[in-house]
Length: 239
Image (cartoon, rainbow, N blue to C red; front, side, top):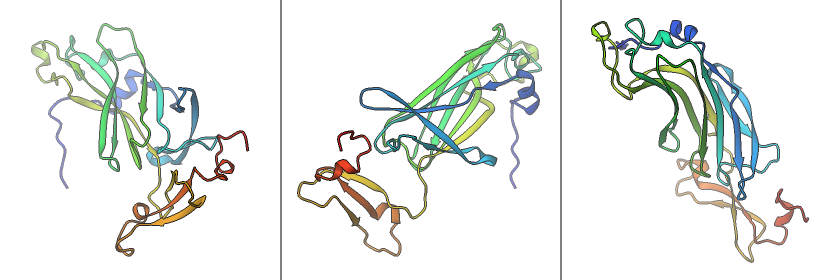
C-alpha cells in the first residue's frame, strides 16, 4: 500500500474545528425557457457517502430536457489560525474556497470560485451558484469544497515551510454527490417528432444484444406529433 507524504502543512481535522466552517443547506433548482425558476428536492440515498438524487414535485424535470443548478452559502468565522508559521499559509497570502465538480460519466470537470480571504479579514461569507446546461451531465456528479492558495505571499524566515503557490490545494472541507440517473437496466425515454408514426414505440439499436450496453441500445420514443401526445404532456393544461 502506498503512503502519501504531504510536502507542506495542510488542512487537518483540528483546523476544521478551529475555523468554525459552516455551510448552509444546498438549494437545487432548474429554469424553464422563460427563466422561471423551480425547486428540485433532494433525496438522500446513501448517508455514508452523502449521495443525493434530485426530484421534481411537478414531474417535469429531466437532465436531458432542462438545466439544473444549486446554491449554497458558506461562512468562515475564525480562520486566522490558518495564517503564519503555525498555520498553512503565509501571513500576507490569500486563501480561497472553491467548489470542484467532476463527472466521470460525462468525462467533464470544472472549478467554481466561492470567495477569497486574508488574515486581516473579519470573516468570509459568500455563496456558490452553479448552473449546468441541459444534457451537459449524466450519471454521478461529485462536488467538493476545497481550501486553496488564492494568491502567494512573501514568506518570513519562519514561514519557509509553508505552501505558497497559487492554486495549491490545502484540503477539503466537505463533499457530496448528485446521482442524475442510474446505471441499471432501465429504458431511456426520448421525445421525437415524427408525423404519421405511433404515439410511442420501442427502438432497439444493438449489434450484439449479449454485449452491447442496454441503456445505449434500447429506448422508448414518445412521438410529440401524435394527436394524443397532449394526454402524456404534464405541461399541457388544455387536455
